[in-house]
Length: 214
Image (tube, rainbow, N blue to C red; front, top):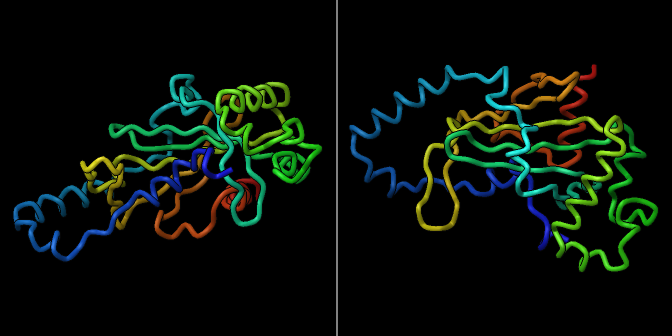
């Protein structure tokens, strides 16, 4: 499946980062170093207790819903992602409120979402079909899911590489912000130093939700 499914924006951002080499650093003049330090200090004062945008706005859903590969042995789940240099990147994740709902998206569950496909790998080529079918499930049972967003702001990115790779550097003090959508509002849950995030997929979001529910 992984050849046909988009990764979470959070994982994309982390994997897209390059480490600055000593040679690159040595070629940076003192003026630029001083400017960079001032910008970093300024960025430390920027917080996002309230999201900068409504993550559920239809304009951010243009790439459709996807099902990222299940990691850490867990099932997949519906998600859509968005990235813009003037904003940053975020993903909106639909996490089942029970283990039964979460297992509905397990690729090995033939009574779940994937049971409708004779050939799962072939079906995943048709991303629009998958997106439409996922959207239908969420529309019919909206109360079965927590809607959790993770947001990496533009201030977290220190440098883009204009070599066509789409790679960039993250600042050491980069934070990822987590929110939950409740009663037509985005509620801030917590922020985590991005480089310290050691969980992925459903395991990460279940852990974040524990922080909110208890």
